[in-house]
Length: 152
Image (cartoon, rainbow, N blue to C red; front, top):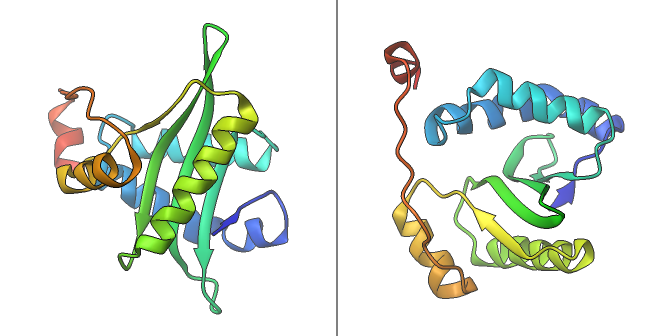
């Protein structure tokens, strides 16, 4: 996977990236209002925010076949690597391992105290637990407006 930057490739992929991130938000993370979250992330990307890491696998036709959205967040002077999204069109252990290696290197580079994944599907949570040493920490409950619930 490559990191998307504010460059020619990043601008070519803008619409495809927007659609992919937005679709993921609507389907898997209703706690993030999709329009606001995706516009915010892309604004950060195009303004050169170095704490945002959007990784993508891109085929010859510039289709994104997998992506990850990582955020280096600071809480009380401690850094945490937060993975908002990770999705691949075709399951691949090698791509998952590549992402984990990227996160481990980013965590070391930033001096982060933890890396956190928000995973909507428990079978994926169990795979991360088993293969990569993560643990399941909490359950998230959400109550939104009825209109928002019907959008997804």
